[in-house]
Image 1: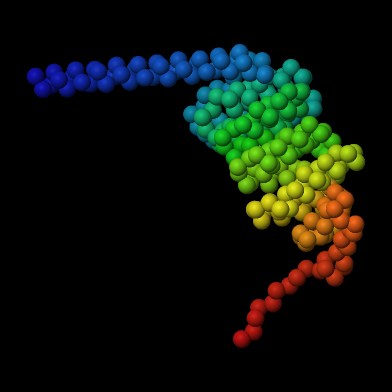
Image 2 (image 1 turned 90 degrees about the vertical axis):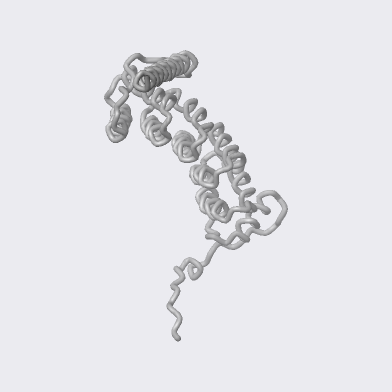
Length: 255
């Protein structure tokens, strides 16, 4: 009687396991179909195979990015590779694999890459958002105002310090358009009053590259410069002298 109960219990457990497996696989398939229908990139049948080894999967993702970056491959093949990586990002529960997919997509020239990266900025993982910001920074390159607006908004709204710093860093590029230059300068100038010291430090670094002024890490001079730009001050601060640029050497104290 006891053996029969054990056998019955085992059968029930097996049936439950099969049912859970079926439901999970069905949901997975439905998710993929949903992504294929609603994705901003067309669906392709030759998806990245489900490799068991994370190392092999990571290697394959990187290879697809490297191949897609080559100049001599046809556009349709490049588009296919990008779409495969997008599906890898969309479907993978592993944030490490998702970030690998984003980094690989960054390498591939593709018309809809900007839209993809804007979508990836919504990812819950901060490191993945950083990868998306770095990709958008390459598209921005000190020229595209719409991307600059996205980076500025991310700085103002993101809750992660490192994501904000990454966006500040991407804004720190030479700008030829005077209007855009002033817009970026004022946006960075607001960050000089941020509560986070690392944000202030990176802001001064980026400001130096945008406005081509050498105030080093003297935040008072940078604040005065922004005030002058806004018309709140009539004097420009003096740039650093050669003596101020000399590295400070800290000698050990003698007892």
